[in-house]
Length: 183
Length: 183
DNA sequence: CTTACCATGTAAGGCGTTACATGATTCA
DNA sequence: TGAATCATGTAACGCCTTACATGGTAAG
Image: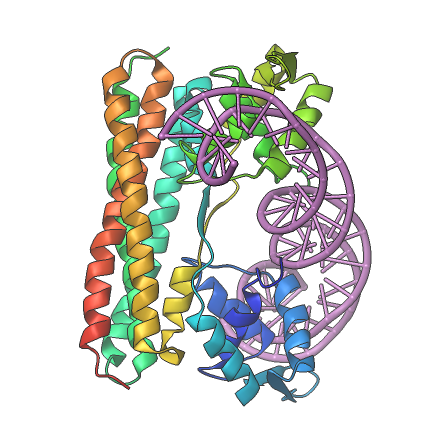
C-alpha cells in the first residue's frame, strides 16, 4: 500500500533543477505541470516538512523584512531517491473527466445543457492550449542550452497535440448533437 | 466541501439505462467508462447501500441456487437526482499521468529507462485503442436505435481521437530522445 | 483439478483537498 | 484604498483504494 503517492518525487524533481519556495513549487504545478499533475498547498507544505526531516532537502530562510520566505535545496540523498523512483515502472496513468461522464449520460439531460457543457469544455481547452503554445515558443528559444528543456518541451508538445485533438473532437461532437432530432 | 464525489451519479447514470448488479457496474466502469473514469468495489458496494437507503434505487435478489446476485433498479427519485446533477456545471476535469511526470524529470534518469517508460506507455495505449475501436464498430451498428448510443459513441470517439494523438506523439518524442547525444 | 470468472462485501488507512488563519507588498 | 499577488501553514474531513474474507461455477 505504501509508495502510491507521488508528491514527494514531484517536489524532489522540481528542486533538482533549481531552489524553490513552497509557493514557487505551487506555481510550477499550476503552469508547467498543470497539464498532467496537480497539488494544493495543503499537500505541498507538509511534504516539504517531511522531506526536510528525512534530509532529502535543506532549507534556508531568506525572509526579506518581515516577509517570510523559505527556499529549499535538494541534497544528494534526495537526488538518489529521485533517481530510484525515475527508474521504477509507471504505476498509474489516469484521466478523470467529468465532462465526458456527463456526456456519456447525456441521454437523460436536455440538449441545451449538454451543449453548454461542451462549449465550456471547448473554451477551457482553447485557453489551456494558448498557454501551452506560449510555453513551447519560449522553450524552442532555449533548446540546446540544457538537456532538461528537451523533456519539458516534450511534455508541452504532448499537451498541444492532445488539446488540438480535443478541439477537433469538440466541433464534430457538437455537430452530431445538434443534428440529432430534438426529444 | 460536500458534493465532490461523483460515484453516486455514475451508478445512477448506469442504472438509468438498465438494471445491473454491483459486479456489472464494475464491469461497465472497466470497459465503457474506463477511458475517463474508474472505481473499485470498495466504493461501488457501499454506495449502492447508500443509494438504496436514500430510495434512489431498489434492489432485487435474483440468487440462482446458492450463488448471490442482487440487481438494482433506479427509482423516479433517483432519476430526478441524476437529471439535477447533469444540469450542474462541470466541476473538474483532470489528468494524472505518471508517465508524463517521469518524462518531465527525465534529465535525471538514464536514456534507456526513459525509453522504456515511453514504450510501455505506447503499448498500453495501442491496446486501449484496439478496445475502443472494437466498441466503436459495435456502436455504429446500433446507431439510430437508442439516443443514448450517440453519446456513448461520442465518448468512444473522444478516446480514439485522443489515443491516436498519443501514439503520434510517442513516435516523435522517442525520436527526439534517441537523437539527443548520450550523457 | 485448477484457473478464470462470477459475486458480494468490510476494514484500515493513506491521501489530499477545502477551508481556515494570517499578514506583507505591489500596483492601479 | 482596495484588489491582486506573495507567502506559509494547520485542521477537519471526505473519499477511495488496497487488502482481506468468502465461496460458487464453468471451462479446459
